[in-house]
Amino acid sequence: MSDIVKADKVYDINGVQVNEYLLENHNTNHILLPSKRTSPLFGVVIHNTEVVKSDDCGRSYTVATINGNMENSRTHFYVTHLSAWQNLPLESTNWTCGDFKTKGNGNWGCISLEIIMNGATGDNNIKARDNGARIAAYLLKKCGLTVDDMYTHNYFLNVRDGVNGDYKTLCTTPGKDRNCPLYIVGDWEGFRGQVKKYLDELKNNV
Image 1 (cartoon, one colour):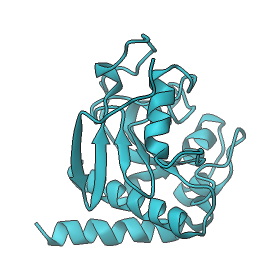
Image 2 (cartoon, rainbow, N blue to C red; image 1 turned 30 degrees about the horizontal axis):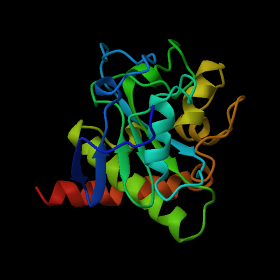
Image 3 (cartoon, helix red, strand yellow; image 1 turned 90 degrees about the horizontal axis):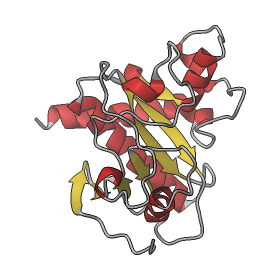
Image 4 (cartoon, rainbow, N blue to C red; image 1 turned 180 degrees about the vertical axis):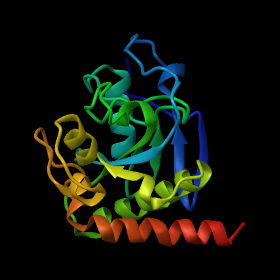
């Protein structure tokens, strides 16, 4: 298919432009898609995905997904320094956590954010992280959750593999497969604080 992808809807989440392009509405290549969530939503999971050679990486990942080039990865949001692209409705499960149907249930019980960065410093990376924090705060508020209901990809990899530890340990210890979100996990408490700040602002502005 052509790589010309245009958002069906553009809206704002907490100061971040979101381009809605739901895969289920554009599945001409008949890629497999996650099912609707049937278990309770309990969290938001944070990932880092590498920058690609594009002015709009979120759009590029959306194109790659709909073209069948992302293997079995399906995320709710790709977040960049420019904007975000929404690929799945909020009531959908996701395929990002690698935990299958283990007791972690990250794929089945969380909304997933892939924050596109290629380092922890630099203007674009800092802005992408900030946009991710803004969207995470919005989702937590919308779903009646707190920053304690926000997880790293590592958390679910560690639960899957039977690693013992508290919330912080499971979030920040690299998983057997990968260390994700690579550019945020080293400052996980700082990121949580960033999200809490935006969450508090949203609550106070009601």
